[in-house]
Image 1 (cartoon, rainbow, N blue to C red):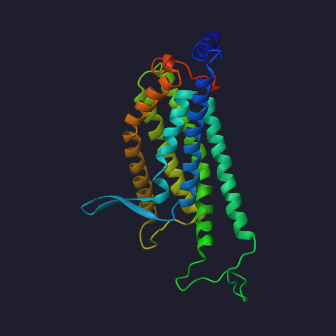
Image 2: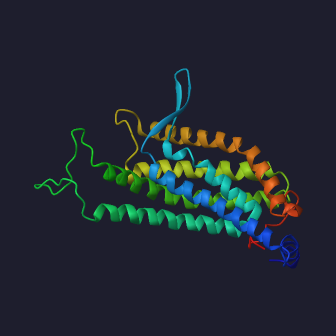
Image 3: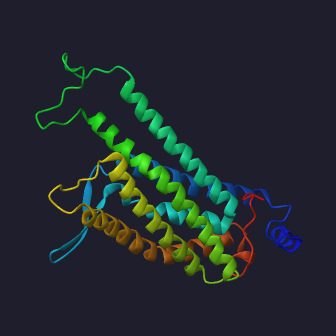
Length: 273
């Protein structure tokens, strides 16, 4: 890091910050990180347990997995953390999200291997299915969660790091101006990476997508990608206004307004000072 950038960071983060301002920065960071991690855990468990129709026009319908509904919030949270607290903090939250995914997989796996009270077929030694051919509810969720989380972990790491890196690339390129560009530019590219990876890995690795064997495979996969990305694209564009308002208000609330819109350097990596 050059001396000029170090000086700029020192100016943006003075050595002495009043205690109540430090507390505000801590609380806001925890809220943003908590929203991010809570949403991440929720969408991985919900996953593709149900597909919902979010938009219909004549004979055209946009269908997305229920787990995708809260997903745009994760990118809004990482963009806010990137803007207010810096690239390092955003990357740290992304890594914690990966640990959360691993924790979910472990608990779901453990819940399936411990002895329970389900009926076991004495001949095959497998769980007895109901008349519709379904496993007990937990094991249906378990199968979907394993597939969804495995796909999500790969896509998540790739997309979130792409989001953070592009956010700061646009920020440096525009010298801190055009907040809408780095918010939308980073999110739209990373969402395309994420959606494509999730659909392809979920199908080819986990095999749990509702694919019609009588129709052409790649047409269906591309439709899943298009619907998912279209939904996330609209959500990303709609969050531009809230993102501006949050950055404007939080920068003042956290006493960071001197470097909100016109700084060409990152936020300090230590968010509470």
